[in-house]
Image: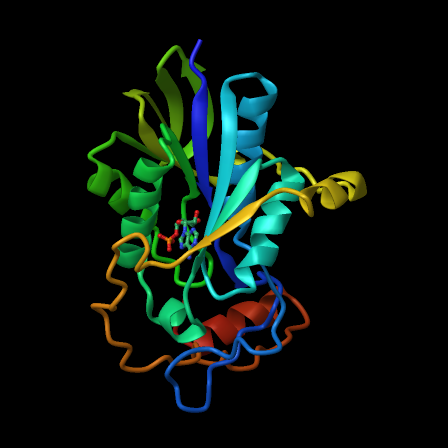
Length: 255
Ligand code: AMP
């Protein structure tokens, strides 16, 4: 029976419930004083890793977060959910904001080698940059198979049976490990960390490294030209009945 050494990427992002505000200079969004949380797909990735460990299919779970020092809180959440230890890859806020999946995937690939990992579970997408690239790029750097948009993951010896969510249906594949998988929404429902587990997590180790320690150049290859608010929607109109609705639609040339 396989025993996976699992690495999970946990990105600290602006909480999904926060209303995003563009900075006055239009070069990014306001992050200061704004509630941050673990990227929701990364909670699903951690949950899947913990379930593998509970089934004795994983021997260790390492939670990795790249970004400023507050990422340690995100790692603590992962530890409280059941990860064994954390690695914080320290980047300044400016470096983090300028980073793209190219830099992050190089870091994750390097760490996977250093830590002798044979299964990487990431979220399918981070809800801030919406790239949906880090898993794919990490697999490419390592030359490992990948299973993306995963809604079911079943280890079979050293292979993984995977159900992928694709347009209009599901795809069943089987990949060899070591591998990279990315979690989709329906993979599982992440648990809440219980108070005793939050207390226990305080004692779990978090190592800190820099991209330079890993030999990764994090200079961004992408220049932000401007960030714009979405266009504001015009106010709607209330209609009394169906006849009035049809009249309005005719007026607007829709029917
Ligand atoms: P993305 O390609 O940016 O949409 O991110 C996909 C996934 O890669 C996320 O759900 C995380 O699992 C992982 N990831 C992206 N950025 C980071 C980061 N700064 N630290 C840790 N994991 C990350």
